[in-house]
Image 1: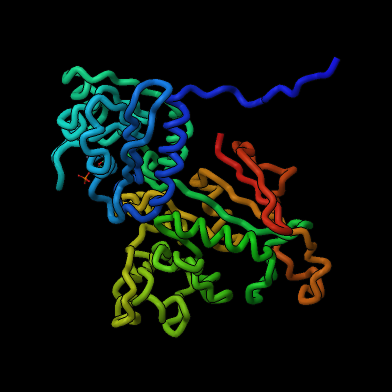
Image 2: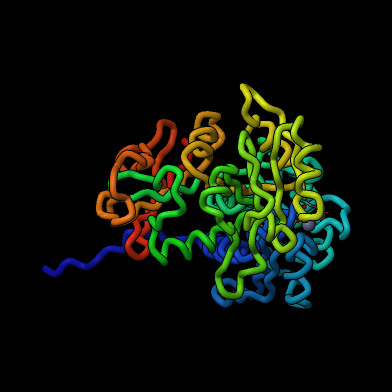
Length: 383
Ligand code: AOF
Ligand code: ZN
């Protein structure tokens, strides 16, 4: 008898499918909604078996308008009796616009399906309460885990008062990050590099130590065609070495928002040295002579930064890990070995890195892996 192939994927409900679509749509504005999370809303009209998306909305660039009024406007008269799928609980507060819960009620939707509750003190289940009070059917917790992943920066800032931190590292197949004291040696291939740029576009901020700024002179911008204006804020952490005034980083500060994080006692001196350069400054507490990273992250969260990518060298990576401030590690492992690189000559100056696919740091687990051209990419997340 012939065996029929069984599909391994579980069958999704209609609610799950529409919520998946909304979650994917929300990704489009990740990193460009300011202090607001990128939320998506779909208005699904019609009877069971004959449903269609009548309106879709996403939090606008800069954060306003919110997703719901945009979707409702597109749906027009079809919003009446429809179901709204929203990745984050509709807001309950009067901001620059009326509460989204009120807008949904006034549009006459019949049902609202929500993935993630909003921990913002002004909302915090009040949005759902308003909807229920108005007689709207509310279904919460649909695809919550997936929505929370998309909203992880916002949720981290709201519940932990610090951004979600991604540590991005590129190593050779034999486990080396680069060459000590030498300028950037190519580790990853073009496909992995393009992925890094895409990731930058989705981040609020990117951070490196001043040592990396001095040796590598990285631009840290998104240079994907069409996404150039999505470069994140750049933050340079100055422990002992200041970023030189004539470096690429400082010279381009008029185009890409650039912060110098320096010890409090160096602030005035640095402001004078960098006068007229468009750099901004964060005066930092220090501990054992080094910038206190937990306090720096709290300051960044206060300015509205929800997602931070750490792209620096070994020292900054170790400091973030030691301080338990890394939520996610993105490890790119190249096909080539350092030993095979002509530039690498002697191993005396190779910088080793202990995290490899078969040596996951304690407290992390693998969430996914991909092949980007000649590089393997592994995503590890804190347990
Ligand atoms: C929604 N839909 O699309 C988004 C929401 O400063 P405001 O008035 O824009 O409020 C910011 C808060 O609004 C933010 O902290 C979060 O609670 C909510 N974001 N809510 O109903 C949306 N982006
Ligand atoms: Zn709203």
